[in-house]
Length: 164
Image 1 (cartoon, rainbow, N blue to C red):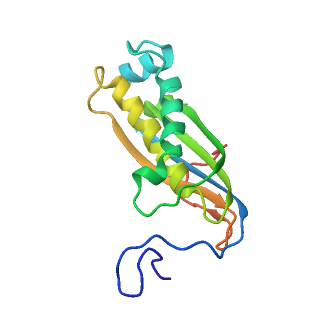
Image 2 (cartoon, rainbow, N blue to C red; image 1 turned 90 degrees about the horizontal axis):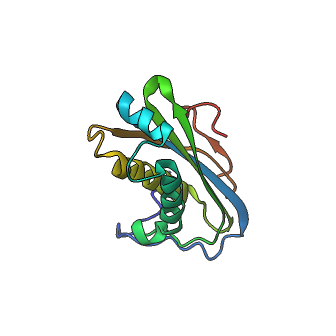
Image 3 (spheres, helix red, strand yellow; image 1 turned 135 degrees about the vertical axis):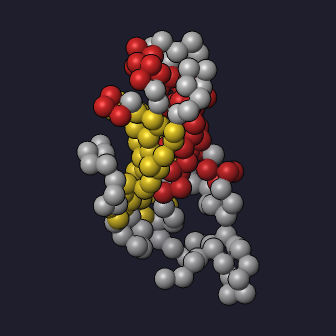
């Protein structure tokens, strides 16, 4: 398999997708933020002084996903038709799992938008909670699944089950 973001001379370029057919595409990404027990309790009980942590993180994830082409070099600007950010509370790990679903009808997939949405959501949780716990850890950010396009469907075998 070749890297598509390099021309035959090895220079970076934005892939020409002009000849591709528009198809329905969807991508789901996930990630987690682990925190202290006290911080987790305050997030779940609404005890963070900055306000509704997960509400703000949801908006940040959506906004971030919409700006993916501005943040990631060579990424195509997409006309997103679907965008959501949801959270699962994982009390046994003192963690919050974010899941971003991005959809479009177009010539290229929405994987980067889903991954950017998850990243922005988790960074917002960190920002809103850092006064309580500066040692929080963001991780396990990955593509869960994608559908559509020339390469077809993909399901990540390492993803946490029950992604929807």
